[in-house]
Length: 232
View 1 (cartoon, rainbow, N blue to C red):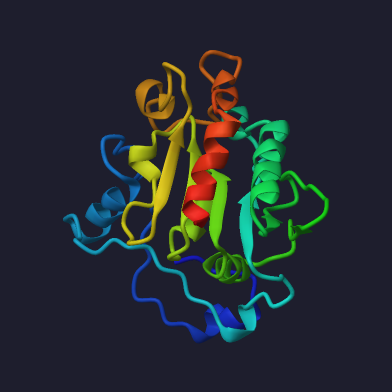
View 2 (cartoon, rainbow, N blue to C red):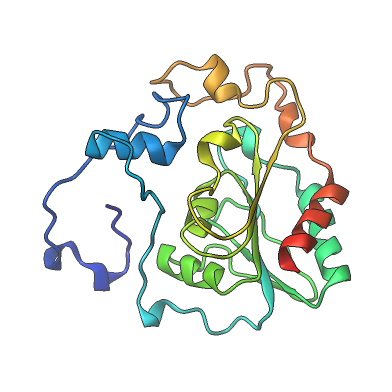
């Protein structure tokens, strides 16, 4: 159960029967998808319905973004091995803009990358969790690296493309839903290092090679084509 800052979800008006601490549950079950690990921890067995869900109010709808649009999350946070280069994101955004009539909406927190330009709408550090969900569910596609927004997107039926580096896509991809998704893993031998080299519980993890090279192992031309396929 996650409490958002929105006062309409005040904990004083919600009865909670039981709280489960999911810290390290996924990391300690590196051979399983995160949703399967959570399900087994909570229920004692793998629940057959582990489709993630998010709930919002009508007032959470984002009404000032013109359709059609694609949502991008350009992660820039602690842990260099999940921060893809800004120039890479700009190249694929240009590819979408040049080949479609889509607007681009950029979301994220205050530390994430912000970009401006024609048909690019900056919503970074402006949306609640529920507003992000509403924005994504009405998009033509969502694009982002392995971070919170891809899991918000997994609660929708919006096609999504996600980049994975430290954690292997088989453990975190949005596979438990009907909508299309494309998982793009870094083209490097140590892809999925989190499961290979780290034993939980661990502190702040970083590249075991020391150079974070995995973030440079994505091809913008190929990714742009994949995004266009999802949109169409």
